[in-house]
Image (tube, helix red, strand yellow):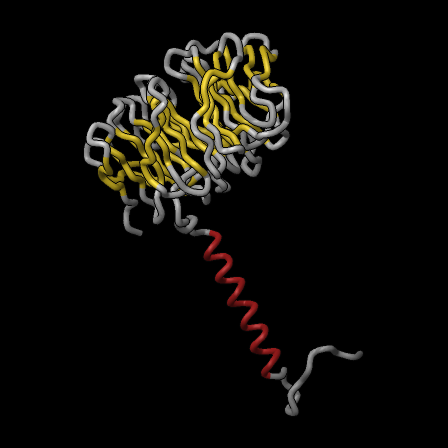
Length: 330
């Protein structure tokens, strides 16, 4: 029988084959070792969320590495990892009893001791976003089949599926829990009781709308879109009320200040802006690239991600940068 392996002149396996086998074995050992390690840091925090009780700030990167900081000490207290990675969104429930993370899984933790509550759906599925309803029990997510899913987080069951929605469009519950706003190609308002569409905000596919959020009084909806505009809409009529000055990059995050007057929005290619929706004035807070902005519940801070796994707090009263929150050392 003819053999394919080359042998040395002494009848043994050639040095080249020996080296190749040793290399493959070493590679396998390294791969197994790496598989058991948590994900390495990525350059940017791309998802942040304040707990409504003001105790915590969560910040995570695309690989699913999440850091929890205490707001009273501004110190990191816990590290969490999203199963499967691919983190897209972080969200606390309004009662601060749950933290949800959406990515290649949809995972829940308890801020009491940061123990895992559970995983909704299957690990490996892709979830573009996840947002809690005002009761702290209902959770809306968007799946890879471009469907909105409504979950009961206490029972871990899916209650309803609503079609259709772009995967990376955001969703938001109205403050009274009766309406769900959804971004995507055709931003729409949905009746949560019946699962039927109330209205579309636009009738054309372009531009694509990503982030959505309700003003605290529930009467106005803010959106961000691919054409570089943050817009305000009348919830009762679906009429566009105002738009901020157009920017050159996708408006990838929007958030209302607790007083409902200021709107913060972040641009994919760089820039965080504060828009006074009553006076119309705008101010650039930073030119840093970020895909998530969030106000603290007391209205003191605006938070956004930085390189190196850090979060910048911007002091609204003083109108300048505040503390920078850094992750714990490895």
